[in-house]
Amino acid sequence: MTQSHWLSILGIGEDGVEGLSAIARGLIAGASLVVGGARHLRLAAPLIAGETMAWPNPIDDAFPTILAHRGESVVVLASGDPFFHGIGSSLARLVGRDEFICLPVPSCVSLAVARLGWALQDTPVISCCGPPVARLIPHLHEDARLLVLSADATTPPAVAALLRGRGFGHSRLHLLEALGGPDERYRQLTVADVLPDDIAALNLIAIEARAEPGAVIIPCIPGLPDSMFAHDGQITKHEIRAATLAALAPTPRALLWDIGCGSGSVSIEWLLAHPANRAIALDRDETRAVRARGNALLLGVPSLDVRIGTAPGAIDDAWPRPDAVFIGGGAQIPDVIDAGWNALRPGGRIVVNAVTIETEAALFAAHKAYGGTLTRLAIDRLDSLGHLHGFRPAMTVTQWRGVKP
Image (cartoon, rainbow, N blue to C red):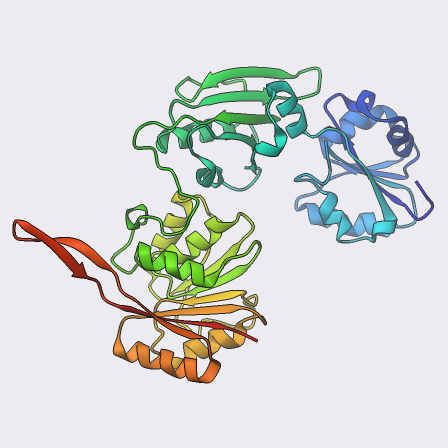
């Protein structure tokens, strides 16, 4: 630690001070302030000589106190690797890189795969420490191996119930508790088993997924079947939706505005494209907005931000600027298209679908004003004609795509 490194972010495991390096032990012993959860402070107690502070709720309330000790020797304790679902990144946003050092110890995930013999690079890790267990849904498929970070002892039963409800009742669960410490425990069971009632609060779940016939599995490409969404007919049909998502071209961490979201199908598939994606869905109908929230939860993207209101009036300066805008309802109002275009970041995309002559007129005007491309999408579906069959055309969709310079 150099003189400029006044802040030490240290990982600590369930083995306490015995698992720390000599450098880490020295930093704790010499710190004027040691910050951490009650469990962390208890584990490090034999070394602490200075002041201590347990994390308040909300945790951000501790940051002013930490920064007030700038220049002194401050230690922040965290579980395992502080930069893996930990406090490290939050602190790094507050201080310069030359002000802190970080000494991690093996994370619970590293310990778990070491116990199980799994390849960490091939194993998705999903945190349910706060977010609902519905976040697992997009990852569920035959032979999937997943690691779930639990919030507490209530998470394993919730995970088991979710797996049963999605048609994965034959899956195997590995319950790993207090990894790395004297109270470490490992138990293997199936989703159908009755879970023990003595699960430790500090636990991690490993899943080996087994799909039953009829299990609900979300494909990796856009264009989910319409039957996966609750809707009242106000839905972008799956063939058109696939073309729409391709035109919107989602990229990691990008934000979509879905104006006139209906069932929420487009914004939901935008979120499914990458776990870091974000979406705001707006609809003037409260019933549809509630339905869109429900669809998002059932399809594993509970982060969808659904709002109620009529565009463009419901859009204000507090909305974060989007990387993409989709307008699926109310596009006949030129002000809605203009609001979406003006809000876009440079390089952002706007896509508007139309099925009526009036809405087409708005798209022609937008094309004249902003450029872009106009495409007509026609779909024919097999239908019965008496005892025979033929293809019946669906309403043709005119699609305008624009990219903001």
